[in-house]
Length: 71
Image 1 (tube, rainbow, N blue to C red):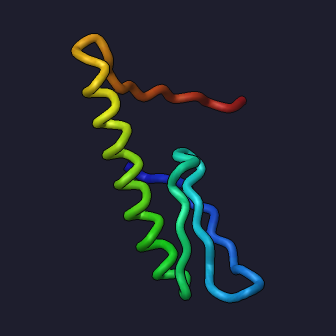
Image 2 (cartoon, rainbow, N blue to C red):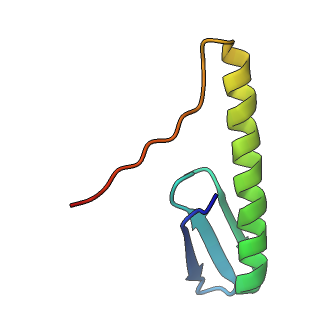
């Protein structure tokens, strides 16, 4: 699955990275590559928490995807 990342150069140095689809997935790094590696790990951790929380809801809960087209 692909995610959209906002990668910003920080005034104090390094880069910040935020996933648009998962607002809790935010990270940083000294280089662009490091920030992207770190936000990938943040995305994986957020998805793991979502999965665990969904499992805790029981058999009646599920995760679904929807597609929205902008016209």
